[in-house]
Image (cartoon, rainbow, N blue to C red; front, side, top):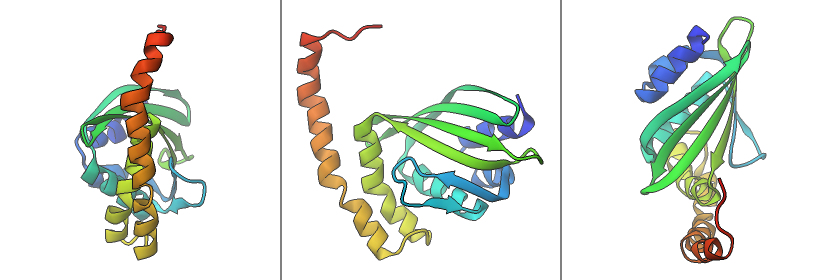
Length: 166
């Protein structure tokens, strides 16, 4: 495994934002898992996003790392309000061996919406959003609650009809 990726994974496991920052190129970009409206540009903004997420997530575990050359994928699990949240970090290394792009993918959908509904306030506190951004994020709460209810009430009934395979 590339040394930068090894350092990133260990820092992520230890919630060590300073060590994570040392793995990032100054012009690093984080592609949001929640919107195509914008990305986070520069190592400082990328670290503030992770800092905001670490404020909300619990039980962070890295389960697998795979990749080669300049592209690596890190699979992790977390809990958000006691619910499972899985993430994939697609990391791209620049020619200097530093991470210049982080693309995040999050599942299941209720967890992604819960994260959207909660992360705006911590991000605004760190200067990534203004007050309107925090309010827009919080506006996802009813949608997140509705989807969580569907997952808890409707989905178990569907399993009785169509058993999960695998």
